[in-house]
Image (cartoon, rainbow, N blue to C red; front, side, top):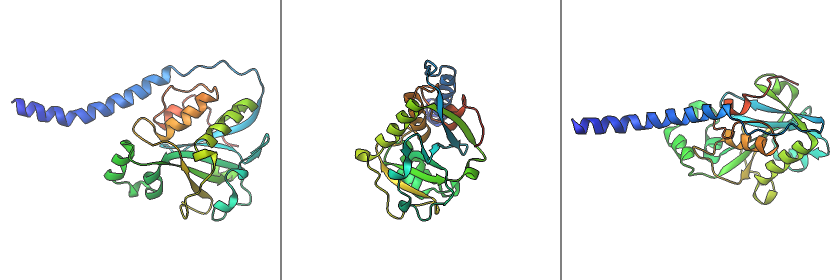
Length: 224
């Protein structure tokens, strides 16, 4: 009987752990990292883009003295669209990014490796057209100071602040991958990276954002 109970406990432990993980993430949404509303006017309309699992920060390609093309040059992409108006930037696990372009490519080994932090991280950068933000976009109005904070946050994710493209790594014609600092793990997810940037910029968001809904819950959905 004891052996049966021990086996049952071992089988249920991962399920209990996963449930606790989700419950904590949901509970923390009620207590956002509060910030005093900025006195400065809103000057930059940025966005958070979500595919239901992963979030990207999205900024105007050129605005308020920031030209993202100087950090992530168009020549790093296969064929950047001539009508690109925005740049999307996300952080994530290297192996997951490079070898799981679709959910059909997901394997248990890759998922476990990402959860345990076995791999280094990458930034995924895309030049986006207005139509690319037609769905699953959330408004992120920023003051000039908040925008500069997020710009610095993105650059700090690059080794020595320099964009080092991964040769031949692309999902399509409009994107590129770059070496990044940190390691993805169960608690340091792609969405946790996005949420930390928002908190540093003084935007109310959950203290921990492992899921996309933690990031966008307090943002207004919309489109350019």
